Image (cartoon, rainbow, N blue to C red; front, side):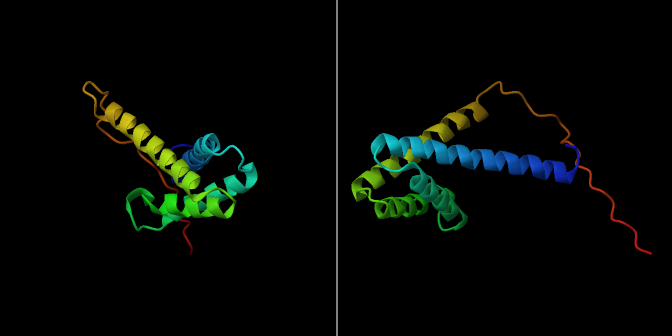
Length: 130
């Protein structure tokens, strides 16, 4: 059920997985446009590993950290350093553009306002031990 904490967590997890999977696929498409000779499976593994670099809170949104990690991994896979850097800058640029478009839609005038009261999430009462 959606009204429970577990239901909300499951929905959040599903959206998070879908977001990261689509980001990996989108980045792969951009990288393959720059260097179509890169093998799919090693490149997808490198993309997944580089997404983990976002967990290191060094810079906002992993700016520079993710690109550096992925460029290094792609060089190890045989891509030239210039091509790897160009691909990662292209991927970051696409993220910045899509974020800017989303921000415009969020702050535009006449946007539908949310309900005054947030939805209620119910939790199950703890079992009484006695």
